[in-house]
Length: 227
Image 1: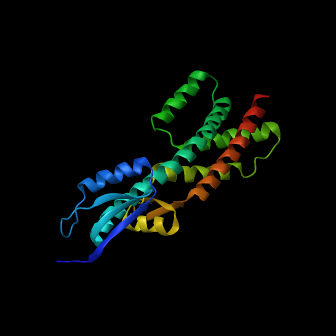
Image 2: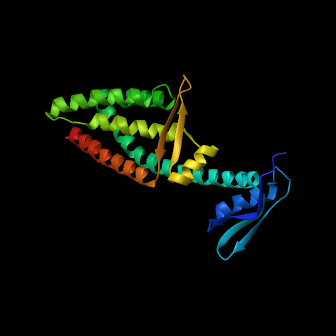
Image 3: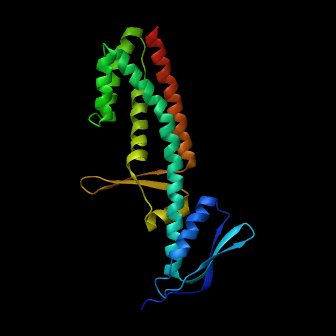
């Protein structure tokens, strides 16, 4: 039998919040070593949370990967939440511009919204409508919105990756997170080809700033249309 024994070491989780502490407690209550079926306990050393004794590498992996997966999930929720939150206002004004330039009545616009909410219209289709609206705006106001649509499409791609792709909590994903302090969002296409997008706090903050800038530009166009 495989028997990678450790000299009864411990895992130091440092200072953790209440939610993480509760999750760790539940894990330790049921976790047993896959090699010798022994259990472990949680101890407090000052403000630090310690788990010991850890008797085998596979037991350490079991606890460490489970808890690190939890950290990755929390990190992903935080990043996703920030981006979805700021994108909501941008999308609202995209819709308002489409309503003003593409529909003659509130009833017709409501039908469009219902189609989109039922999932029968993708964000890509919405952007095609928006592109037509921007072309009308440029012609009417004798202006050029250089780079606006390209920037919007790039932002929408990243937003879709965050919303629809899966967070990589595999062993490799955990190692990547620990080494790079980044999380990977992954997707496998119909040909089983893997695609990934990596985020950390800095890249999420940069994306958030780009969305806010685009929102300002779109709101400016919306205000011009009302004149």
